[in-house]
Length: 98
Image (spheres, rainbow, N blue to C red):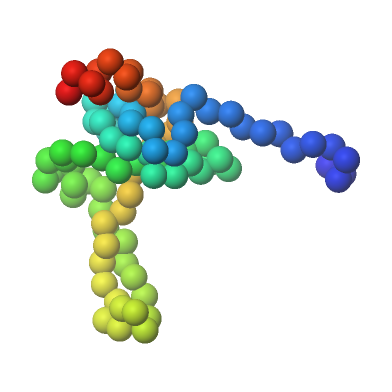
């Protein structure tokens, strides 16, 4: 691809900050908010609300290296990443009712 050829732009039905519902996969039925969109992998990073303890354990943990800001290192929770085709935008009417 040379410099004169335009890059392919991906356009999704959701955007950062939208309230969504997961419609298939491991997180089916969960509702949350989009934190980021990963265009290279066609995935969205979610902040899920009201998770049970069992579901929180499925997310897993991530280790942090030692640094000046975190001298002992440590563990933090991972974010949930779902393929963009597995989410749908919540309707405005549903948000107002809830």
